Length: 75
Image (cartoon, rainbow, N blue to C red):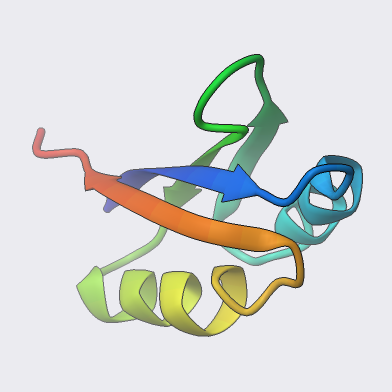
């Protein structure tokens, strides 16, 4: 299961947040970009349960992340 997660990050926190994101199992990429959102994350995990745990307990708990918007790939 693949998902794209779009993050809004507090000013000045992108490098720290991206470093932490890249250490999370299942995160295949995490990149800052201009404009909104601040960071695009790609996650590949085996199922929705693991996706929920990854987003709710690992990504959303990183200091500096203000909001997440998760898009599950349907193919």
